[in-house]
Image (cartoon, rainbow, N blue to C red; front, side):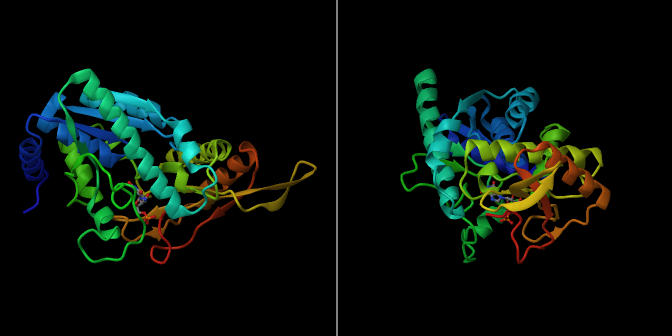
Length: 323
Ligand code: XMP
């Protein structure tokens, strides 16, 4: 039968055998999956693991600081932070197609890791041959991994890998669902703030801007997202909803009025969902007063946003993310 203890023991033994005396690197995204994968691999191979946090500029407000503080404090893991914002924005310039964005982000991620790998080798000698990824069972299924299921979206950590990948993969969470990953994280001693974090996609805010991704649009979306998160947390709703993507419809404008003036701004979409495992989801019936506060604050505080709309679609037919 399934126990977190046996999963950990099994994975630790398997990882030790797979890695031997080589080195591994692990990308931290700030999310639960990569944090638990990293903590598990660190338990197995200790200082043979170096974590790399790629700041791709597609993170939410305060996220980089949270990884640097909370995760390092909890695990004592070696962490290398790479500032790659410019590189990602350049690669994404002019691109609006969702699948193309995902592929570009996945590809750039691997390139940045290869660079980090080269730097770690230069620093530490023995070859870094393994890349740890927090791929979950639903990611594998939705990317058509071994089940014959059609490819719905190329999740950046499964389908978007370039052909010339130089690493062998360690994916210790490949058979687990999200709730199981949280239990494993708890068992490994990770703090509540990390273990109970709501899911956030690897490609970050890059797939929450419908249209081209630019620094200016990212800054708008970061503000709107921070407001929504703040109000949901203040209302005590974090554990009731699975996650709440906040999406900027950058290619859409609508007419509004503010003060004595006409505005012609962008809509922000709130996509609060409830779910067990992200395979299916229902839209969350949030209290109207919470929705009203979020709407008022976003339209008052975020430049160029003059409408807030609520997504009331379940999955299926909608996916949780808009891209
Ligand atoms: P969808 O939009 O497919 O999302 O219903 C299902 C869950 O997966 C998250 N998601 C991702 N997670 N890399 C990730 O690590 C990705 O490329 C990715 N795309 C979607 C999404 O936030 C939701 O929790």
